[in-house]
Amino acid sequence: MRKVVAISDAELEIMKIIWKSPNITANKIIEKLKGKTEWKPNTIKTLINRLLNKGAIDFQKEGKEYYYYNLINEEEYKISESKSFLNKIFNGSLNLMLMNFIKTKNLSEKDIEELKKILNNAHK
Image 1 (cartoon, rainbow, N blue to C red):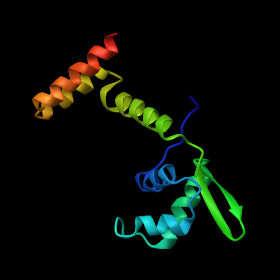
Image 2 (image 1 turned 90 degrees about the horizontal axis):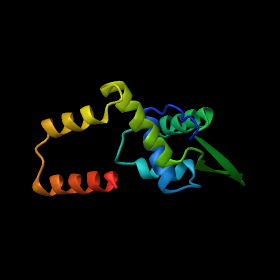
Image 3 (image 1 turned 90 degrees about the vertical axis):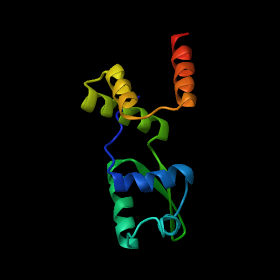
Image 4 (image 1 turned 120 degrees about the vertical axis):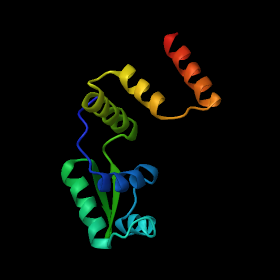
């Protein structure tokens, strides 16, 4: 897996839209963010340009329209960010992370059964 570039929380909102709708225009991104954020169109275009400069997305020009698509795979990004979080907060210990979440969250019987299934499958 190649190194995934750092993406800010605001840029991630743009990436989520592009992952769901590759080959999307800036105007469509702006439209999808209406009501979800109070960002002005220029702010959204600035975020798109940052993602372009970072190499997270690219575009194809057709006539006057720019169609944006991802260069970073969503699953690769999630894996990279998960590893970064695990290393930064829990010194790379998955056990510490799980114990912390289990201690601080009331788990339902369904949650516990799901976790058991996941751990049993991981053991196989």
